[in-house]
Length: 332
Image (cartoon, rainbow, N blue to C red; front, side, top):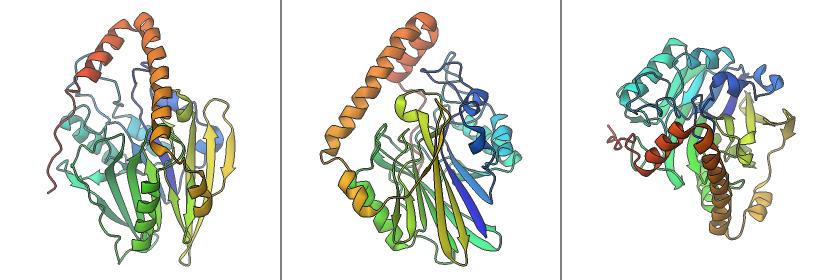
């Protein structure tokens, strides 16, 4: 039997909201019941920050959204053996830090996904585990509040006909929302119809529904697994376990709350239930959720002006002039 586990966004560096954040503090907010059961044949997270030392950003921004290379060893120790890198933050600190990230992951036997050794867009990775061919595709879309940095228009390749299982990792969606858009649902269904077996979404910093569609599974967003934020939607994350035996896919899902450390079983929902609950005026729904986060951010800004004035000033300059972002590289 082949077993895979999928986790939410992982950022082991600090942020403007939590300037003293690190991987140890992030792990302390995950229940032991979750951490002790992460090991599997394939345990995949979305690495939302590079791991390095040689940032091109000036102090005090060097540690912002950037973890330490030694974090890879810790992530491997808890069971993670593959990380998706194709997202909107991987190039925040420059290409040298991405190279450091790739080296750290490989040194700790963690499979990097979505980027090749030349730091170019490389969506498809194929591995053999337990005599099964596993195809993993990692794509960062332009759906939602993000811009792909590796390549402007990342086309999703067709699933592999020779693979025993086709996994699609999508960086997509609208931040802080608890429901996907109808466009995302239609797109996910189309991808399942084309042959993908499992679709795992990330980026929204919120746990969204897990849908069972034609006996396949779509997790629209798993929320933040480790992340330097305490905004309400970031406090709940999901973990999906997939078991495949004799060609049949079974799925079990749990969520955990980082504030009260509760762990709950969550059931995949039907397509009908999903469609009935997606907000009718989705654009207004997104604006409402974004407005709530902006209020939270404003409160943190006023608080940090007093407690961390230098970091606050650096962050404000960074937001006005995001000089760290590099131009997308052309697809090889």
